[in-house]
Length: 166
Length: 117
Image 1 (cartoon, helix red, strand yellow):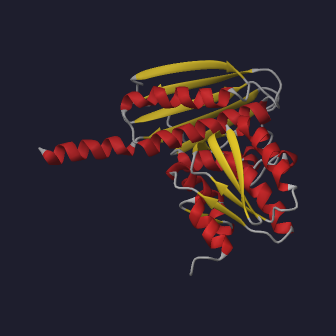
Image 2 (cartoon, one colour):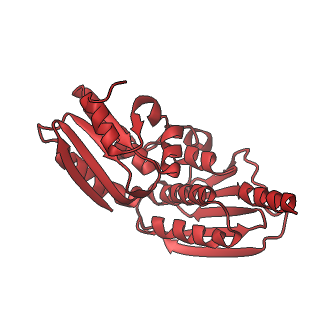
Image 3 (tube, chains in turn yellow, purple):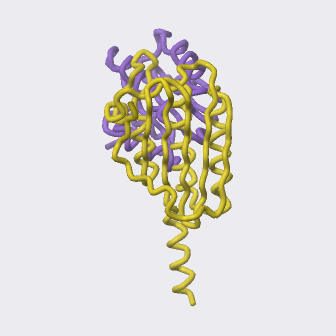
């Protein structure tokens, strides 16, 4: 069973100007590593501090989900793919863990499959708030793929200001 | 990740330093709960001024302590001026149930009832 939601991450429309794939073990100490790598990779576009913080936060949530829910703290690898476009970035976080049975339910604010862990159940809501598009694909027993798109609106503003200055 | 404590009367001030994510959350939770069981603690102020990053793991920690402190009719306040963390507190709904101040001094004063509203 392949479960898909109706997210609309617009992958593959344009050619990325740069790309990067990172594979790392599902260890909680790699959460900060993954978000630092993602942030420094997109820094070459010179986005705003707020946009950088948005991406760091969303990556942290996606990687944490893979560790806690995908692999349930067991060993496994997480793959993070960053496709950088001239005005945006698409970040995909993939695990080969247990998968999500009901994606719609998992995306509900405050829903958590692990209430005993005192998780807030806000992971997907944070990703949706801090990024522009979030697509979740999952297959039970196979794993989960979260694709997030962020437009760097600050770059457009900079362009506009530069034009107006002329 | 560092957790530092100080007391003002029955207020426990929890100063978090570093990055609060899922990796740090177990340690932070253990430290805070160890301090919370002391009978002198009735209210808590989370001072996030020295936190450079927080994700939803931090929301889980604050909400968990909020529930515990509410049971003993205590109060919780948060001191924070970091835009990313404020955005997170806002979207999670925490700012609807917990008062947020720009710094810890203001939170303490408000909690002690020193400042006039």
